[in-house]
Image (cartoon, rainbow, N blue to C red; front, side):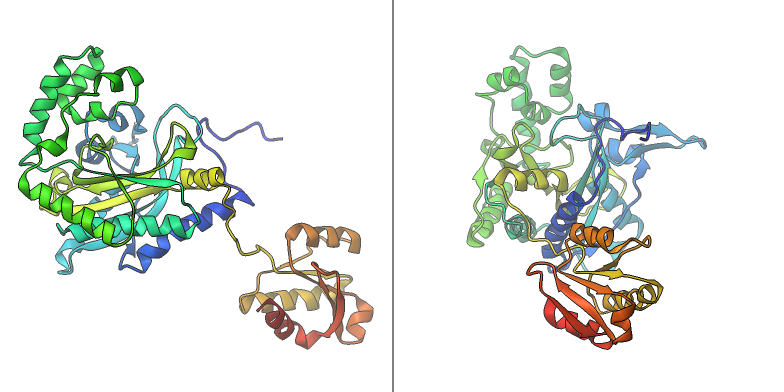
Length: 420
């Protein structure tokens, strides 16, 4: 047994469970690919300053959770704790916004890293699928992304999730609310760290999950009461578009996200079957982020959905995905000539898209048939010297147990026909 184990707060993704994770990623990505979003992939680490500026220096992500390090060359880097800042940086660096076709619509899938206290649904290494629409200020874009996420979840069979929706205002109206919230927070019995956070970014205090803090926030001023007319109109149009699409949501006037770059539309997908880590995804509009990281004004909106937590949500609802079998046909050769013939046929089957495997290691019939059973294959091909002398192989239906002889040259066509 190996003396090494996966680092604390991480896990290995191995078969058969890995098939479910791949199916979830595909289900989330499918509506995006059908809606004009192109795939982007960024490095697993970036300049520390990208996240300090974009995510926010006062956020827990930057101050407590980010894996930061200095390279041998003296560069200050960090493992990416989220995807939006990296994707926007990549789009700006490649001048995608100058191609004349805004918004730039991108989707991505990858691993992210945060130094958090590990628990179910919260890992130090986790997987997300995300989408970003860069360079356009349009309520229809906000609505589109929310609708696509809803579509992805429902395609997986999930039903017990809720969409929480709020507006965080913009640079015109949020400063007034910020000042009112700070005045309110200064009158509460809060610890020094929380009071310090209130001075830097008071909206972050609203996101504090501690019951003793939440109890004191009951009468906190609400941002919706401070929205300017433009933000009110924008938010109402987002609500109307989502409603018209048949997507249910809940207005949550206290909803904020754990990143500083959000403006106007903000939303979260929660699943009540997951306990304290109920958020399975979320996002919102971030109209000022491009300028924060040195780019031009590019109003944008996006989201990220957690693959890990989506899988937990499926388990909580008892949803079992219908996954294609890893192997449809398993070949069992008895003798060297049979090995040569059946290996060639397995290769042919794979070329026409049939999932096929082979009994490696010169096993006897009993051991090879055990492998065939474990593979989950619907059909098994068995051939020995006598079969090949007659120009046939034995085709066994693993569900019915029925076994028939078929010609060697008929194997591919027969299996294609039976597997549909």
